[in-house]
Length: 324
Image 1 (cartoon, rainbow, N blue to C red):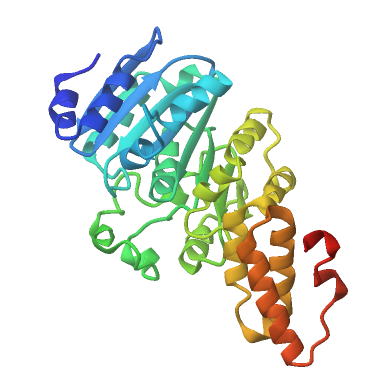
Image 2: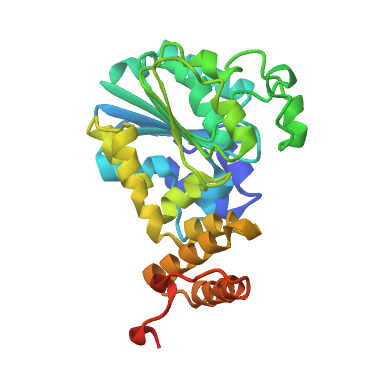
């Protein structure tokens, strides 16, 4: 039911109001929508015997287009899964007594026990929550993209990216995410090891049932690039088929070779003088694959630098008649 609390909050933002109303009217026999507090809400709809629990920022959902809906809803439509989405407004890491109370209630009601499989998912600041709240459903699987293990200064003094959030209490309930995963099934942590803070957090997820997947050159927001590459749906499909592992994920990630964003990020790593030839090779590849003029222009600039330094230019980097 669409409760009064949802309407009071949503009136401050018409787009949020519309989103909340859509979630409150989901066409499912067993469903609920609850506003938990000023920054959190929960939507649930029962479909199949698999439940996906997603933690998503309201602002990110609203940015996806006209009449947007959470990723959890899309996964339900695509795979026939039931879904529970925790909507988070702002940077809260879902650290709220109201969210804790919701999970207490769902555990008491045995909601998680009623499903054959449960998957928790989150990315960025929501990845911590996906890992931390996974303790509510022992045996569940987790997919977390760039999670913070904690922001408690004694364990994450190296991470200064989140300012005021470092003053939050990460020592009480659902606090230290790696410890909350002890009873989980298989946990997949995806992150870019070139982001020092994300690598330091990932190193704390070191139990035998945790798989670390390194996404080099994907940056601080790998989820965005995975979505651009259309790789994110494939990851969920692999999990659904029981085939998500390092090898299959590596094959999915080959699509990055055709991603303009990925190639631009990779090129940024080739700006040092000693990498001029490498940069020219990369730009030539990007020009051939994407037909992007900027890559061709940069390739030509680098080739000129090579020639000026007396460095032979590989014939493969020269334009042929078809490129004239």
